[in-house]
Length: 188
Image (cartoon, rainbow, N blue to C red; front, side, top):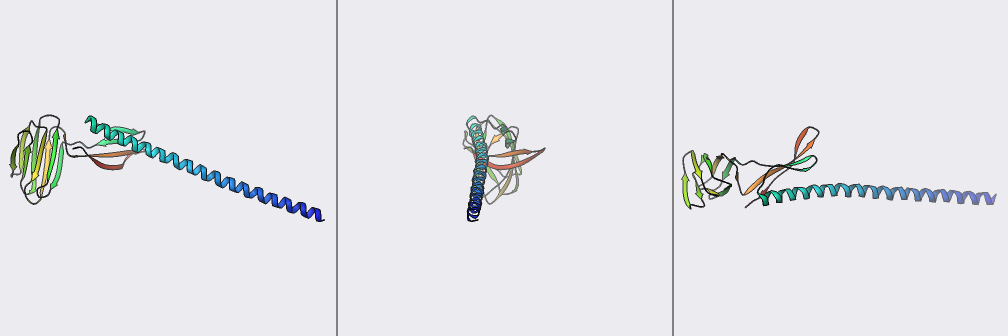
């Protein structure tokens, strides 16, 4: 009788030990599996961020702000700059650059007068009426508020570049385009 009880207790302990080891093995393998999945998703996110940064650097260096595909369902879209509505504070200025000569219209919607400076001619022109249209042959124009606040619309035939270029990252989910990120980069 004594031998049977001893063999049964050894059997129970061995079952308990093997069950404990199998649970520990399953727990450790599931943790490793979840860490591998997390690392894989982090690698994908890092690759997408690197693709975005490379596309932005390429666009700035080559002055080519065309829409670019980042991944199979994400697109980088740059803002088109042929219209601008801005509020300028006292003595605040905005710089606009052009690829070639353009016709431009500046409309003061409210408040105080503004001035614009053709950087190649170094002459300052005041705009105190509601609308002014001019043609420029320069590469850069500085528009400056002269007093208080001004709300100004700027129209042109072609695109111009501001100091900051806005862009969006659009992700396509099913048949919907969702804005994933919206930001701006400094050009000059």
